[in-house]
Length: 190
Length: 311
Image (cartoon, rainbow over all chains, first blue to last red; front, side):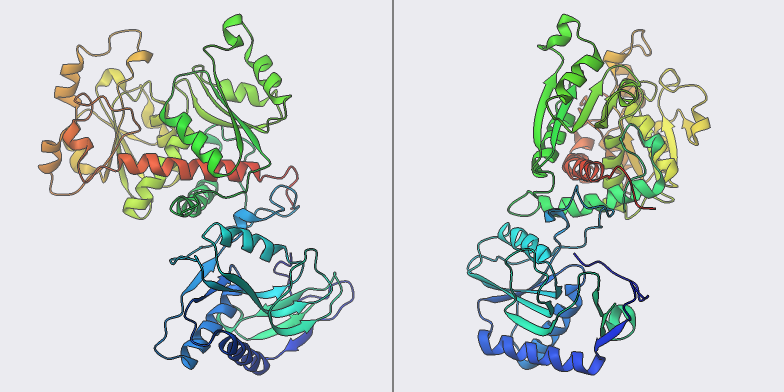
């Protein structure tokens, strides 16, 4: 799973900017409209952001939908999958720290829209599905990602809503920077 | 983020950073325990043996629940009714169990230092669930968690530990932890139950229960350990409760709220009266609930420890 890389040259690849702040804004608006097209007034639909980095995207999408649907409260939760990872004992990296999971509503018979920033191997989403199903039986689960790294999947998991598709070599990392954290909105490949 | 130790043998070996990590991780597990499905699959490839050479209800059940909530497989071993009565040694017993692919050992033993001894001979991670009159680290951790839950933090808080300090591993672990986390500690009880030179651990000593109650934010009341005393250290239980017991009247006469804690089991009417134990200031049942979350955190952090940490 991609982890937070740093902006230095990696094996001779240069850092490349894929999305600027303005393009990011437009893409997020387009994704929000796509959601609206499918889910109408969101009765029976819920948004769940994946910790730690999907949250920034899901916050923006939630905010945009609130603008487009004034007066409608869409149930919005956050999901941390640290305890559902499949590499708990085997990964050579240190244990990641778990963040907050807050799903204060039932998922029973709801249409869940799972939101993450980058879809790479698919293992995070696999863990997310396991975690979700421990909260109840949703009617359906759809996946929304900002970046789809198309050919690097290790599990049969595909997104339903895509911001941008990126074909990158394994050694490269795709990182999303957010104004709230990194002072600017940008998607970079390093 | 990971622990600096491979086993949890005592608070003495932990850094303040370790303690903080365990308490923060316990927050996440307490959250899991509130969900409809109170389980996570994290330790489903781990088998843990609860090796209890000494009686226990609370601690054993708490560890067993923590293990099951992490989806680990658990085996319970009690010395009575096992080959220990045929004279099998500690190392033999444990190595036999470990050769059946058991990954972790949670151990309670009446000899101080038993888990430390064992850690030199086996590869598996060991969690000390109480060794003689030495330490009971998970109890101190859940006590700290409960104080933090009620008062926000440990730094600068005034904690008084009442009772049989001399024979109490709970007292010792609490003293190590609270001093490491910059809390102020006073131990209070009859002079016969307070070890000489305990001030060297960074605590003050008092023989006056009322004064100490007026000083402290938290009163951690310990049980009189009759089974560990081989000579009479006070005249009668009744006299102990008259001079050193804590009751609701004493608490009401103070101008402030004191948090009441007890590791259990309570000798009602001796060290703590029923009305104090069941009062709204008492977090005794919260301690028990927090115990499962804290033990889940300890098992999770130890099981996830890699052999070679990246630099």
